[in-house]
Amino acid sequence: MEPDAVRDAARVPHGGSDDPDVLDFSANVNPRTPPGVREVYEDALGDAARYPNDDYPDYRAAAADYVDSSPERVVPTPGGLAGIRLAVETRVEPGDSALVPYPSFGEYAREVDLQGADPVFVPHDELLDADPSEHAMAVACNPNNPTGDLYDGDALREFAARCRESGTELLVDEAFLGFTDAASLAGTPGVVAARSLTKLFGLPGLRAGFLVATGDRLEDLKTARRAWNLGTPAAAVGAHAMRQREFVADTRERVAAERDRMADALAANFDVQDSDAPFLLLDVGDRDVDALCETTESRGVAVRDATTFRGLDSHVRVAVRTPAENDRLLEVLGDV
Image (cartoon, rainbow, N blue to C red; front, side):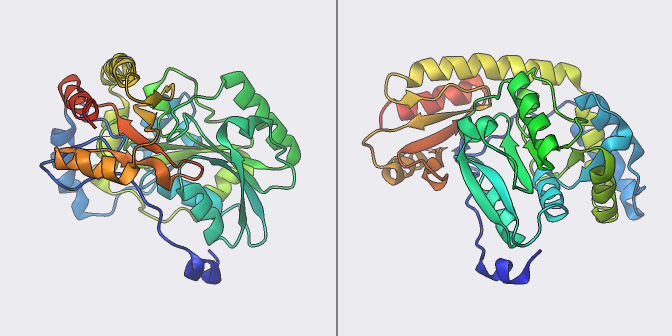
């Protein structure tokens, strides 16, 4: 990390409310967690009195099965963002450039900036047509946050091939891919895939995720990873969660049905972006976004001010939660 770049950097705004009296639609987190999580966590506390096995064999095996890869290619990380940082800081050098989509997750550009490198912004829906040559890295968010659209699998793999031919690493953030039945790029040569347990499994405070890579990049990531970078309870719960296939299937079905229902209802008052993710992006038109967010929160519902995303100036983002909670959101947004 470049010290001068750190001094010039700033924090990136995120969603999430800590008010227990507010229904939080500003963070894209599953309101439900897999069965047995509490018991697994409590059982693991006894083992937390000693250092974890730094190889994390059970966690890597579960992660590999979860994304249809091999355990040897899995690099455990304390959350998806930690994995993104590890990938960027071991690849991007001062003076380099990286292709970064917009509007998209603001941490991509920040991580590139922190290396003293230059983010080269490209519209997210034009990324796969961009020329990756002359860039150290290209970043794709799949499905994209905050728009929710999923890249065509064949087109994404073709872009990965062009990146590989150009000597450009493709970093694919698959934080929301588990909400879809699309195949992961984990294990694709020249690609680093980043995964998180935050979103699908409803465990943002656990801080567990992983990277999948191949070849020399895999060895770089394994070497640079901090020792014991995943706590014992996080590793145990993470491995347990990733094996809950019925929970994943049920979540996908519920989110898809509720997302469609919400989109149909919200279309009466907003321009609703098509989405394959557990959230919807709404264009609020002439309404004042700050005033709208304040109004909804005063009525017990927090929505995400999406104008903090590059390229958006009249948008909010809302998560897909449980049917009853979604009904409350629709009631509030139907009267703003």
